[in-house]
Length: 283
Image (cartoon, rainbow, N blue to C red):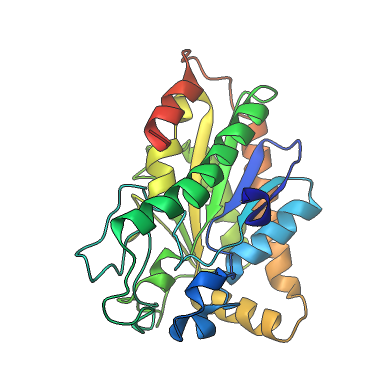
């Protein structure tokens, strides 16, 4: 079941890359609704696809979704329910695309039971995989970093991309990661003349909030690629060729993160870290 819906490539680096918004597949039962035909195969996060490809080349663990995030958004909390029974633009199972297009015929929007089924079949296994990989890597590294690429702003029906910053880093207002890791990554972005911001409009995104335990050696940084960098990646992927500048930037960001982790002291806090994470994320 889940094996067909997400991909896990295991490495030994202290970094794990997670791409919850790179899925493009729409289940057959949803394709009976005409609007889903245009969504099927549509990529929401070109930055995540490029980051995942670079991670796999470097032997970095990568966990990637296969389902389109409009089917179920793996980067929001499982209790993020609909705004109303007939409108859910921001929650787990969207009823509209980022362009404002209705995905369901009137009266055919997903019920609470439909949403819960998707949580059990897709959301929970995906996050169980994340916890398993963090646990595995934490056994061999004093500090690990989960770098989460997402397209939260792009998926929002209220998005605005004009003049957007290229690299949007989020650390739950500084609570989910050691500052040294963030500084190393932003310096890498700046060196290749890409704009960046830390803790902008998406500072308190789900994975940073729930997984970040820097005092216990688990650091989480979320990254949304937008602006000029997103446009460059879209063009390169549309033309089925690699963007050398983007490849170099991603390699530098990953290398900077690994170097920062290598230079950090072992955490002093002890306790049942993964029981705590399990309670925070899956219960």
